Length: 285
Image (cartoon, rainbow, N blue to C red):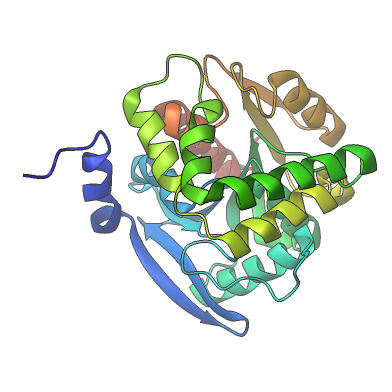
C-alpha cells in the first residue's frame, strides 16, 4: 500500500472540486482552475507556485462566487509568453485574453506576491474590467533598483541551474511559511513549487527583476493590501509602505508567512469575501 501523504486530502479535492480547464488563445493554450458561480474573483499566484495553491481559498469562496485561478504563462499547461523577458504588461495581455475567453467582463482581481505585478498592470490598463484589486504579500519587483536587480536575477538563475526545480522546492518551501507551520502546509507549498517549469520560471524571474509594481500607479480602481506578520520575503513593513504609496488600506495577517493562502486559508478566504462584498456595494473597507 502506498503511504498516505499529508496532502492526500487536498489532492483528492483538487480535480474533483477545483477542476482544470484549458483555453485556446492566439498565443497557445492557457490553463485555469475554476469553482463556483456568481461574481467572478480571479486569483494570480506567485513566482514559486501555481493555480492549485489557491485550492482551500477557492473552495471557501465557491458558494458565493465564480473563482478562477490561472497557471501563469509558462506554468502548468499554460503556454509561455513569446518574449523571453516579459513585462507585467505582457502577462496582463494574456490575462485579458483569458478573461475574454471565459466571458468575464468584470472581476475582483487578486494578486499574490509576483502575481501582484500582473494584477496592478492589468488594473491600470483595463480599469473597467476590475471592480476591486487585492494585493496579498505583494512583490514590488526590482526594476527600479538596477544594482539589486542583477544580483537577484543571477542568484535565482544560478539556483535553477545548479539545484533544479525539485531540489529548489525542497530547500525553499519552509522560507515561504511562518516558523511552526503545519506539515500539511509545508508539503503543499513544496508540491506546488515542484511543478514549476524552467522556461516559465525563467520568464517570471525576468518579470521580477525587470519590472516594478509602482510603475502601474496611480490606480483608478479600489485597492487593498494585505501582508503576513511573519513573512520574511515580502515583509509586513514593506507591504504597508507599498499600500501607503498606492493610497490603499493595509491589513496585517497575524502569524502568517508569505504563503498565507496555504498557511491561513480561512483568514484569506474571509478577507476576500469582504472584498467581494465591497465590490458589490461600492463601499470602502
